[in-house]
Image (cartoon, rainbow, N blue to C red):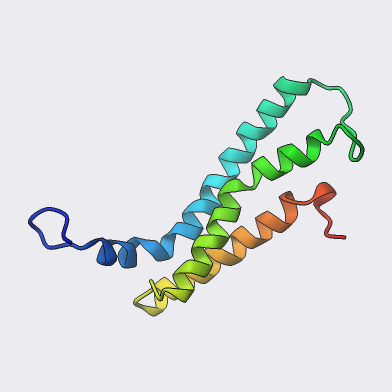
Length: 116
């Protein structure tokens, strides 16, 4: 199962780049949140949004907004379980990316940034 004539397998590619997926997801999260904020402003304008009740626009936007960070958390868990990192530096990048993505998910994925 090689890709091309260089003998690089999909598993070795995953082991080379896999540990950096969570930190890349964290880096993508910032521009993604800007896009979501602009989309929310365009969609609802400056009308106040209810935090509860049948019109939970804020919850929907918050859930859509944390997609990259949530995928980063999943990638960090998968990378740790499947042992993608091969060096100490890769383990550090995997851990830092996972923690940053988890913090972003907990902060922006909950209404008012508070876990109740």
